[in-house]
Length: 69
Image (cartoon, rainbow, N blue to C red; front, side):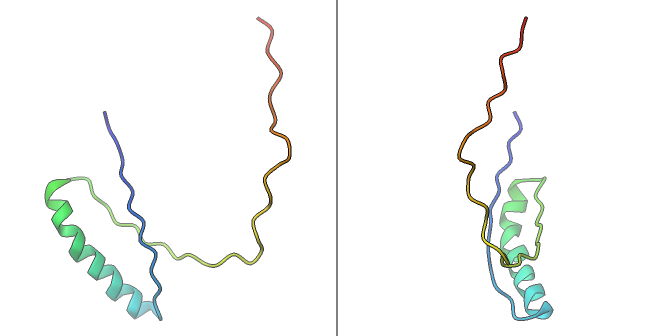
């Protein structure tokens, strides 16, 4: 069985250099896990705040009609 564990870390950086520094710090801390787990990857993405709020949930949930056999 193959499983995936995801760890999320949200952090703020003042500029690109600060972001690189923080990424290096995370990579350093991940080295202990990398010794145990072969297939380990770090993905850093930029997150921007939403401009508009999320849409509300729909009032009714769509349920497809039963199919004839």
